[in-house]
Length: 107
Image (cartoon, rainbow, N blue to C red; front, side, top):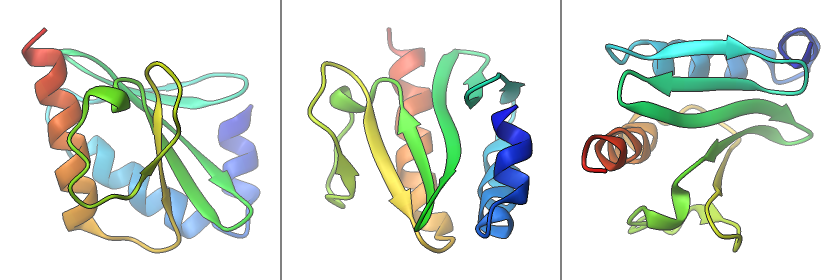
């Protein structure tokens, strides 16, 4: 399972901190899949989370529809945008996670 690999990663502390923050949102649920750990809100799918060589990545499933005033999202596909973190930043996470939840609410 990818979750187990993430726990064994040098960035496991950051992974767990971001995970705990995601799960602090009311209605957020975690699903541990073979290749990725995903997070869904009661309004719909939000993102996936995994460790990377330099930190952790959150892949927002509707990231292409999100405002990116902080200019931290990467990717140019049809939907997903990635937020790469090297350290915990609750304000940044709040900004993007809240948007992702609102996008699902305002379908």
